[in-house]
Picture 1 (cartoon, one colour):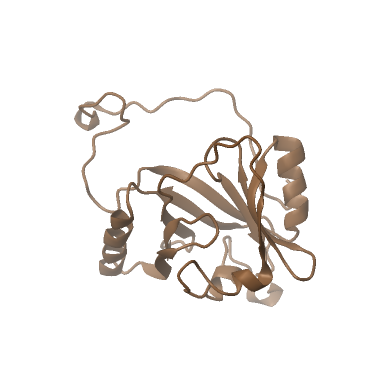
Picture 2 (cartoon, one colour):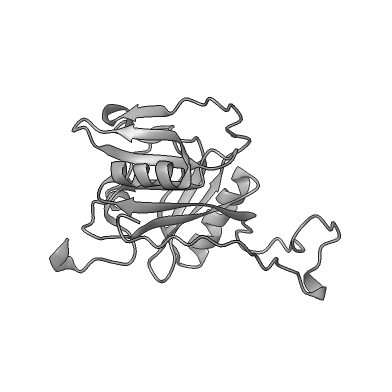
Length: 210
């Protein structure tokens, strides 16, 4: 990758097999549902940080055949962020501009929940367990997902998100472009994007390099 992110291509998967006490009654589910904790359903997407999102975009499109469903066009001509898909999900990978002085860093990993209510319950669970809630619950303007961001104990940003039924089914989907002015309005219902959302990533950057 142009900015130090490690990408691996594999062809063989060892599929998960639940142990006897975890096997579900419905055999098309992976595991028995216990209803404990936040209970995310699956991994949804990653967001990576890059100093030049345009270069990252070229790699994803030309080398991996990804499509861009939405993006941010900054006033200075740079691309502030891109959302990529390789299937019918609205996005599997996002890349946003690095503002913290790092290289090849993670912005966040996202788990999908079945409902918005799962995210509201998760916020209470995080609060009770002393997990830092960075922002949310709220609704994203870009991609329209209902979200909650927390920092797990090692400092990695984790998102819980519910996308509803949003899918990209049109083969000729046209990329939605957001301007810098539009993004400064905040999220879908007006919540302003906090400063750490632009600077915090992992691994952390030494303060003398920021």
